[in-house]
Image (cartoon, rainbow, N blue to C red):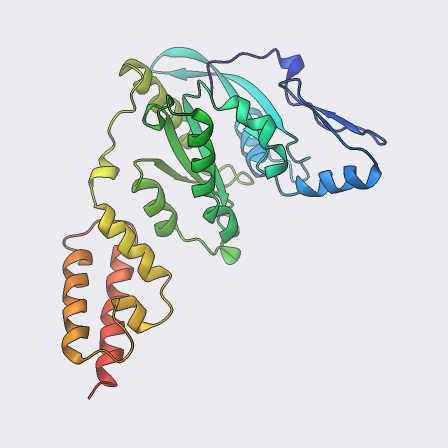
Length: 296
């Protein structure tokens, strides 16, 4: 969402028909495909870039399109919403995520008021890429840009595909809330969570504008520490029980118990409200028990 206006006729131009080798975008940038093979390669790059487009389609048009042409460069949508009895015009810029389109999307970071980071709960790579998205935006905002003056929302999409889910809610929520970001679970297919996400997102941006352009503090970011969040992530990615407790293989009983006590104080459900802390605590208890059984 930006302080930028484009005529609807300029917006979201996609490939139509065959034998096209000039791809033009909403910001009037043209990417050239020298031949048919290069054009095929270009199309393959954007094959999986329709995640955000389907969310916007569901929100703006109240319908789901299963076969939606992936975003090429920048797609654009405009809608009007009611926030606190005020009608607000919203400009939505849907950015293609492939590195191929970096030179297109980097022009749209400036003056951004709100960002929705979307990942597929069934694709771990899309979740892991969130850090890279933040780094890219920070780089393009430059030394005078301020990420604290932007409302960020993390959208965990495709929750309707439960059997394929590999990024659980606590992992996604931990990543978002540890940064002070909003977090939502959605399904573009069923519509679950879509309206709630956008309405809360817009409300937060209005609060930002009324707060002098500074992002209001969120309770989530103050409810647990960075150390607790980092520890939960480390435990999630641990290879074995030794790694979970942070001790070297062959450590003594005293070393195992000392490491356990430190983690127990940090992650005990009575003292830690970070998403995933209860599961992490249980894992630590089980890891200690397993190690002590094999230490004489």
